[in-house]
Image (tube, rainbow, N blue to C red; front, side, top):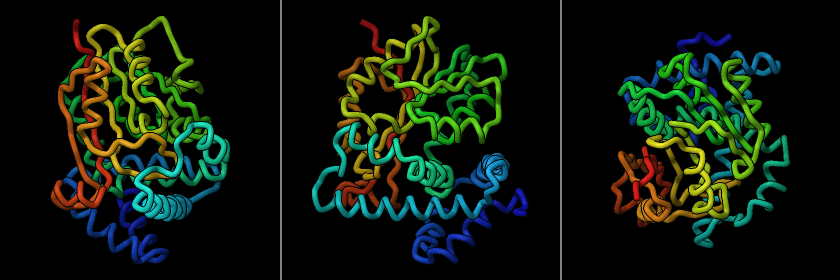
Length: 304
């Protein structure tokens, strides 16, 4: 049994044994995280470990999934550097190879759980998200699209309180099962649906959509549909990466300017944004070597 305050230490030690090369990079990366990292990580991993126990699994399973995801990512990265494009360009191909394959989806989603706190760019994005809710902006109806591991909706519930209606929509049942299992919160509605088929008479005054745009063939169409779900005066928290090949990524953004242009063209105003590269290098070097960039922003719809 892992002591709750030592989840991160346990994960790091397990990675060092299973893959010393990955551990060396991990140890260096974790020096970039802020002072709140340990507390937030252990809080979430405590829920994750409880969920694993319901499946007769341990944290070692999560570590194995993380390392498998990293191995997949390295292969996709090599293909990307050779071709200049992502390996998949259609949702149908990804759905057939990934989303409809429970075995792959399982290890991929569990790998992403650990990545939220093992990759500094992911953790920075999470802190950027939390800072908005610390401002005390009231939210009556909250929607999350692509809930994944449940980390963001958990934080939103904690900071917004029990009076806020919270809905999570995801096209992947595997993803929903994971988020629902980790959170164990019956007050959150989990809906299995294609976003383009999802509609409701109640509009949402806050929508979170983390790392979804790169999974679709037409991000412009998705953003237009997103506006139809937003209440007047509502806000959106959106993230998407550039130059980040993964087994299920389809749409390639090459830099932050392409993302900004898309947001502007679809009628959004960027209130605040945050950029973070996967490697601790200058922006010039990152662009030269096409290193992954995580883009995050708070948005509202432009008037007129």
